[in-house]
Length: 228
Figure 1 (cartoon, rainbow, N blue to C red):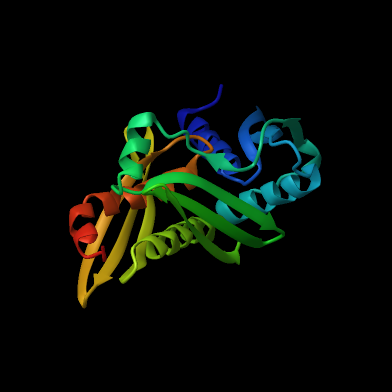
Figure 2: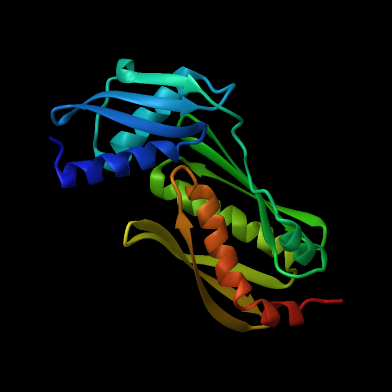
């Protein structure tokens, strides 16, 4: 019988694997306390060899687990870009020059290199931010946050955004992404914090939404400083 602690570890490992770009979901099959098999639902067009290598690297870097690539089994899913379907109400808000809305995030990996592009929507205009860097669990989070801040800087000219920190916290049965950013306008500094629930396989989206949560709380201050 699988213990509660072991079950929690399996859930964390599955969540880590699901956050690898190109993977929609992961399920681990145990043989005693050892991993017998990892079943992967992956996007169409992704190389199984590349994904298997990314999974190996991710498990080793984040959990210290070495896995035999032959024990990774693949099934094919959908596309590799995460889009958010914007409701009519939220789209109306965005098109009236109000708060920024998350449009899409794309994470591309090549070996240990990572490229992240973020698209945000405001006033019927799309703003993109791009960040590059080495690939690992923690650095991927920072790259997503940095790309989001670059998109914010493109939208709010004259404002400087910086990442102060990003953490994952457990509240009840949910994982929460918490971010802290600094905003500098006309020589004045502000520290903003935000959070978003992290669903399985949706860490990238949760990071973007946590930053937008921080920003939107001060939207009335930021918008007043923008040129007409």
